[in-house]
Length: 582
Image (cartoon, rainbow, N blue to C red; front, side, top):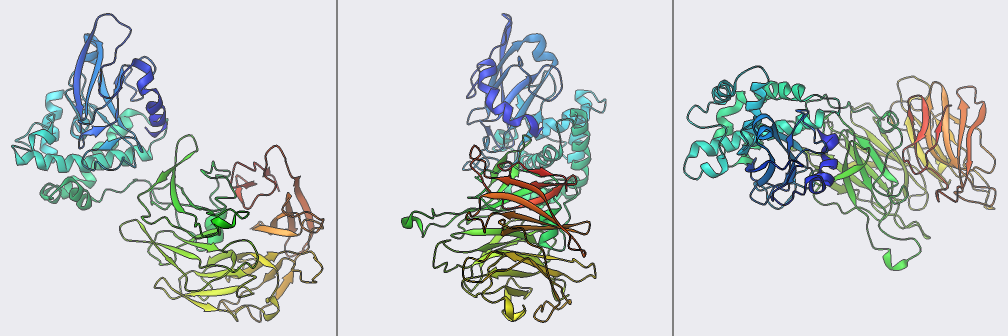
C-alpha cells in the first residue's frame, strides 16, 4: 500500500472537502453522513476513504477525510454505498500519530479495513475479520473465527477496545493483541508493491497472525501496555529475506545494483553516503553523513554535520527514519561511509571516515563507527586518534573473521593506516603495515579487493598523480595482500595514468578490468571533469570510456562515486546522471 500513501496525504483534503475529522460529501444529493473511529491506539491524522471499487487504493471521487485527535471521522455517501463498501484507514508514515505514543508520528505506514456496512470502528481486529471474510466466511462466522483464533470468546472484536478497557480488562488484552497485529500490517505494507492485490495482503495477514502472534498470545495479552506487548511480540519490520551482508565494504558498496539515487542532500554535502539493509527488511535504506561547515566561512568551522538514516519511498525519494540512531551529531567533514559487519552480529555496521576542516593546515579529526545493537538501533563512537581519513575500505585482512579497516591519511599520520579489529568495537592502529615509501605520498582513495583471485584481499590505492612542482606524485597502485593484513613488503603494480585527469576518486574491478573514476588535475584545473578510465588486468591496457567536462547548467563538475548497475557504470547520485557501458 505504500505507493499511494504520499498521494493520499496530498489528496485527502482536496478530493471531497474532508479534513480534521469533519464531514465530506460526494456528488450525489442523496447522501448520508456517518461517524466512525480509527484505532490502534486512537489514530490522529490518518486518511480515511470509502473504497467504492474494492481495490484498497484511494481513487478520485471516493469520499475521504482525515481523523481527529480522538480518531473520529465523518464521511458522507449514499446509503447504498455505506451498506456495500468497506472503509479503509491508512496510517501515513511521518504524518499520522498513534495516541498510544502521542509525541511522535508513525515511522511505518499501515492499512486497516472494516467490513462493508460496519464502519463504527476500524481497527487491526476489524481488519482481521475482513481477512477471514475474504476466505468466504460470513460476517458472523468471520467474527467467531477471529474470536476463536485470538482467544476472545467473551468480547466483541468489532468494538472500540480503547474505550471499553476502562470497564473490562479483557479489552486491555484486546488492545495489546491489536497493537501486535498493527505491526504485522506495517510489515505487509512494507513488503507490498503497487501490484500487490488486497486479497493477497489479507491472505498474508491471516498467515502472519497465525505464525507470529497466536503462538505468543498469552504473553502478549498479559503485557502491562501495548508498547510492552510489541516488545514481546517482536514482529519483524518485514517478512522479506534480509539483504545479505558482503564480506567487504567494497562489495557492499558496488553490488547494490540500483544505480542513481534521489539523495535528500546535494551530493557534496552528503558525499559520505552508503546503502544497506540497515533495518533487515529485505530493502536498502540510505545512510548519509553530511558536512556541517562552509569552507569559505571560518565562523562555521566548529559546526559538525549530521548522521541520518532514510527509508526509500515508492517514488524513489527518501524520508528520514529517526528510529535507528538517537544522537545524530556527526563529524566536521565526513568523506566516505563504508559498510561491513564489524561486530559480526549479522547486521550491517558503518565506518565514517572523516577529514576535519578541508582547509590548510588539514589537521584532521576522529572518524566514527556506528555499530548495530540487539534492539535494531545503532550506537555511535569515535576513534581515539585524529586523521585526515579521505579514503577508507574494510575487509578481513588477517583471517580472524572480523572486518578490519584501511584509511588513507596525507596530513596527520602522513600515510595509509591499517586498523585491526579488536572484536569489541575498537581497533589496533598499525602504521607500519604499508610500504614505507608511501609516506608523504598524496594518496586519497583506497579499496580492498581480491584483484588476483587468490582469496586474499589486495590493496588498491590512488590519489594525485601530476607534479605540482614538489615532485610528490602518486600513480594508482595495486599492492598484493598475503592474508595477514601486513602490506609492508608486498608486491606492487603501478597502473597507467591519464594526462590532465590526475585525481582518482573511486575504483571498481569487474570482469578483469579496473575502472578508475577521475577528475581533472594537471591541466591547470582541479575537480572540473568526470572521466572513467578502463585498465585491463593483468595486461594493463588503458583507455578512456567516458569524458565529461564541467556542465555549467548542472553546476556539478565531478562525481565522487560510481557503482555497477545492470552492467553499466553509473553515479550513485542523480545529480550527475552518467551511465556508461564499459
